[in-house]
Structure formats: structure tokens, C-alpha cells
Image 1: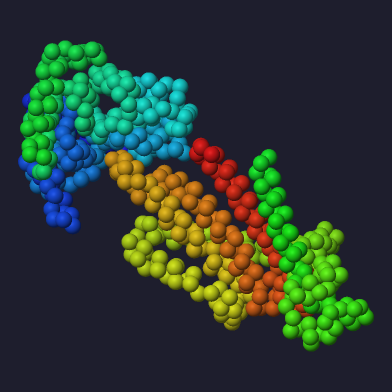
Image 2: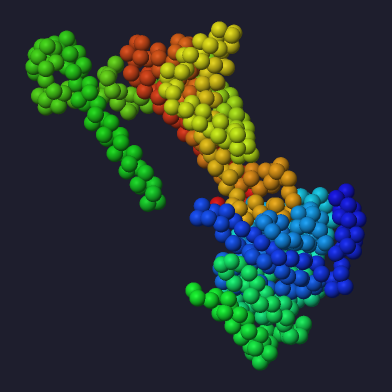
Length: 279
Length: 305
């Protein structure tokens, strides 16, 4: 209860300091990250500069080793950059995390097998000290949001892979972070389930007005979902191209057959090919 | 049904083998007895028989085979002799009687359970320390491993002597020895279990800015439950061994260990074997009980069986 009021108090202030005219929530300037390994230093990120505005749906796409996941982990303060600056809601990533700026969705649902779906969604709420009544309220809210109402009492193994991933999205939404970071959340699911979840994710995004950072290596997925597509290339990990989508906000699945969609997909593919260079 | 047949077949094979083994093991004693009773045996003198192989003696004195299973003090008692002794010393004796195996088993069991509780508690505490502190990981783990390389039969008298000199006796020294044997599997299993969560699950907690203790209670401890129970099953069997070994060097008058000792003093092989079986049955019962608790706990946790 206590913690809640503090965040509420901090947030408008922090947001105020962050808001430029463009409402920029994530800002990276010349970000560098080098891992020291036994085979010498590995340049995971080099000179990455990017602005993400409030309400954006930004996809990061690129071959493995291009640093897309690393960049997302930097925003989440799971990795510490070795150079440059990075601000989230006008704070350092560490502060932003403590202020519950973001929810993170991993590639695997990672639900605790000994907790029911509802109890899994309560996990962050318990840790953050929400009251019991508030927990119940939020669980039913987010379950409804991911269309899993009525499944709260089930255990994870009783749900399909796609449903489990939806539950993990619900878990990330349960505390009101304005930013949702998703690291290949649908990577392990089959195409049909994936289409369905993409559609649902767009609906959810429209309803909640979150800012979403989404890592993927599927071109159609990136184009279908995003307002902004960041094409990255490896060795060293860097941004090759940033594409602002011209697609309308309302996107039925068959928009993927429109010339506009195909054109954007083409540009992404070109970018990936060029960035891949000689290998 | 098929598995029942398989189990019974194995059991029958073991019992058959046992009866067969009794014949050569006991033949010399039987023939000595028969000679004293005036029967015709070949060769006729104990001295001549000593130089012959047991199999040879059996071949020459087939009439004596039946007697090898009913001797009073056989080298190897037959299964039914042990079974009868077990029956007589459990069902037919009052529990308070010094000759009741149940009385002796209960003495050993109380030391086992106390030792198991101490060992499990210590093992879990050490594992928690090892998982959370690098210094403890590097300093405690090697000692825990070294401790298990010392033969308990050599260490047990030392523990009893040291504890006696500071005025501790009775059930405590036995429990200490039994704890000494049972803490180790718990440490190893719990360290493994507490480290079972993968990096993704730890990262997830990090994104909530969860504290170390929240991580322990909400993730690490529940994850370790299956490992804990596997360790406990090994630990409780080790505890029982520890309690029995603890009874041997003290010349204890009660307990399964004391029963083994008394049996060997007086050449009562049937008594030794029935004490051994009592210990084995007790261990099996304890492990089965833990298995039942495991099932209940994991079921409650919603883990699919």
C-alpha cells in the first residue's frame, strides 16, 4: 500500500522531467555495450541511438547476434551499458525499474508450475506489496484483457502454449507499467496461434495505450504489429535502419496482403540483407 | 498384473537361492551333529570333513540336506527360521519386553528420527547459506564432502567418547551420529534444488525488483521441493544406519544395534538376521512414509504427478 503511494507520487514528476515536446519515453544516445569474454571483447551494441515515443509499438528485428535482445535488456536494466546514455521515463533504467516503469515478457511463459494462473499473475503484485483486495481486482482485470477469464484457477500445465504466453503477458500487465517489453514472446509458438496472438496484442495495445518494445525475427510479425520497425545488424550490434510504418492503426489480418504492407516488408528485408553484409 | 508376477518371480528366485545357499553353508555343522548322534556320515571324522569342500560333503550325504534348514544355530539361517523368529519377537512378545523387536526398533527409531530432524535442519540451513554466499560455497562444501569420506564406524566411538566426557549420553550421541550421516544428502540435494530456477526466472524476479528473501520464498524454495524429497529419502535411510552404528561401540542394551551385537556374542545367527530384517523393514517403512508425504505436498502444489 505504502509503495503504491510513493510511485504515484514519483511518477508524474519523473514524467514531467522526461516529456519533451515529442513525449519521448525511451531515449538512447550512442549506447555501447561490450561483453568481456574469454575470446576477447564482444561488441554487443555499438553507437545505438533511438527515441521511442509514448504509445509507440516498436519492433526490433535482425539476425541473431545483432543485439536486439541486449538492447531490450538494457532498457530493463538487466544489462548495464558500457558507454553512452539511456533514459527511461526520464530516469536511469535502474530507477525506472524500481518505479515499475515496465513489464517484461520473456520468450518462454515461465509460469510457476506450483501456482495457478491467478496466483502467477499475483506474483509481481505480492512482491510489490499490493493489498489482497487490489490483487484480486487486478487479476480479474488483466485476465479479461488477455481473454483468459475463467482460467484463473487452472494450473499452467492445463493450458496450451499460446494460453500460457497470454497469461505471462497478463502477469506483465498486472501492475500498471506504461511500457511493455517483449522478447520474442511468440517465437516458440506455431504460425496459427501466432497470428491470433498478434491480433489480440494489437487490440490490447489499442485499449491500454502502452508503449511496446517487441523483439522478433519474423518480418511479417514486425510489419503487422509496429508503428516503428528498427532493423539491426550484427558484429557489432547496431541499428541499420528505422522504418516508420505508414499502415493505419486499425489492422485486420488481411492487411498483410495489401501493397503497402508488402512494400514495408520489402524494405525491412532489404535492410536485413544489406546489414548482413558478407556472411 | 504383469508387474505383480514379475515381482513375485524375483522374490521366489531370491528365496530359492537363499534355501540353496543354506545347504553348503550349514552342512558341516549338521554332519557334526549327526555324527555325535550316532548317524552314519561320510567321511566319518570331523578332521577328514574339514578338508573336504562343502559341495562334496553335500553330494556324499544327501540325507542331511533337510537338516540344514532347521539347525538351531546355523551359519546361515533359512528364510522360514528368520520369519518365525521375527513373528515370535514381534507379535508374540509384549512390546515392553526386552526380547521384543518392536521395543528395540522403537529405541533405534527415536534416535533415528531425532538425528534425521537435526541432520535435515542443518542440511537445509547449510544449503541456504551455500546458495546465497560465495564464501560459504567455497568453504563449507569441501568440508561437507570430506566429512563423508571418514568411515562412520571409526568416527562413531570418538563422537560417543567426546560427548560422554562433556556429560552427554543416552539418545543424543546416537542422534548426532545419525545426523552426521543424514545431513549430507540434504545439503547436496537442496543446493541443487535451490539453484534449479533458470536465469530467465531469476531475471523475471529482477524486473520486479524483488528482494533476495522474496526470491527465496517465492521461487527458490518451491523449486527445490522435488530435490528435497529425493534427498530426504536417502537421508532417512542413512539416519537409521547411523543410529544402529551408534549403538554398536557403546555396548548399548537396547536398540536394533544392541540386538545385532548380542546376537553375535552368543552366536545367535537367527537373532542377527531377524534384527537385520527388522532394520530393513523399518527403513522401507520410513522411505515409504516420506514418499507418501512427498506425494501429498507435490499434489497440493499442483505439480502434475
